[in-house]
Image (cartoon, rainbow, N blue to C red; front, side, top):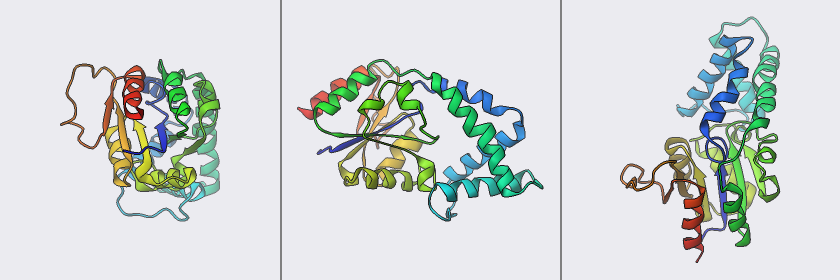
Length: 234
């Protein structure tokens, strides 16, 4: 297994998932129905019903999102007005809230080990990255970062993973993708031929390979990941 690049999911992987849920609470106000519709869209686009984003980039994603919300809420607001409302209530508030996230123990030490091996390091999030990597104190170690929206889709669609491969200029078969969601991260990355590592907290002493067959590695925490990567590199 030749690994030339490692890409980390951010939310729930670099820091605990409960923080994601906690810091999304401010985005529910002032319009709960608006936020519910945004979440309905994000759930629907993950179902991959064959509908295309046009164009297949972040602009296309935001247009598709606003159109979905407009139709679901039967809103009389224009698409531009809806986009502004989503930006103010969702994206701007999320940017402020997520500045308080804190990394899992041994995240930085694990990434430092990877850097020592001259392996490219990337980070990918279903939400805008903004200052997350700075808050997690790993910004100086990450070579590439992106939001899945930039590909026009969300995980587990193939597009975000292919987008990262292009960004890193690395064959997909030589990329190890690290994530905490089997469905979104592991299944999604394996579809494009990436190797995969599932971060599964509190899995010590359990045999999870049968339950998660597409995961090439299963790690309980970053200390465990550092150990397994050391063995792989040697």
